[in-house]
Length: 263
Image 1 (cartoon, one colour):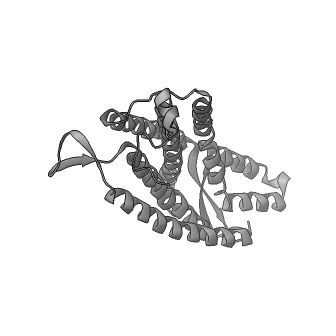
Image 2 (tube, rainbow, N blue to C red; image 1 turned 90 degrees about the vertical axis):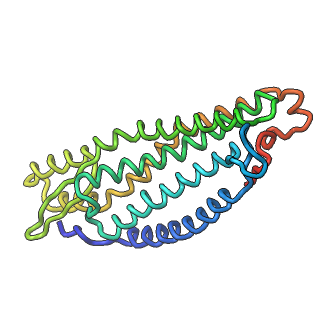
Image 3 (spheres, rainbow, N blue to C red; image 1 turned 60 degrees about the horizontal axis):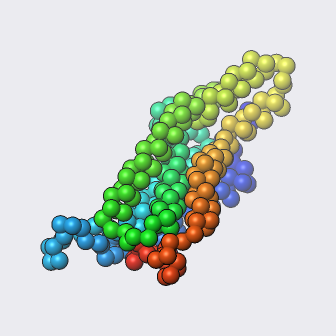
């Protein structure tokens, strides 16, 4: 297993761009988050002009939660992956750390996708109704966000089952890796057939174990497929629905309920 602990060119490339993405992502996302928290808030039924309380507008509430999910992706998935690629071996919490990392990585992606879908569904609601959005829209958005986070957690639960650590030795060297149960079974099968497979096959398996992390990218792609279908469905319905007279006259359905909307 001569490939254990050896970085390849693609590892250094990935370390470089992950470092850049994490740095600029945190800086930009922090700026957006601070700006959102400083923006004017909307009054409630019990709001006093001088003393408040004021609350975030419904769309700003969406954007705050979107920022939170972005922080999660950067600080959990991206930073964890950067450390993992740098060390090649799994050092972050052993068996339970492996499961926790994969759970929260999936959770942040699911939550991000669900919040985006919630925004699309909320826009669809605005298209179908011509009344001005007020306190009821804030309550609706809060329920949608709570549902988005809950579904994200439920959909991430399988990660606690399918990921585990495998420990094997090469002479005096002990190597630990976080991988899926299917890869563990393959390793056990190949180890049993080691005599027939030969050293070249074992080296290939070692390479695959060292570079198991790209599965996170596949996971991110799969996490966004269903939310993307929902978002596309909302968009198609919005376009296909004749606008109510009040909305059609102003043609401002995107910002009608959200005067503070900025992109």
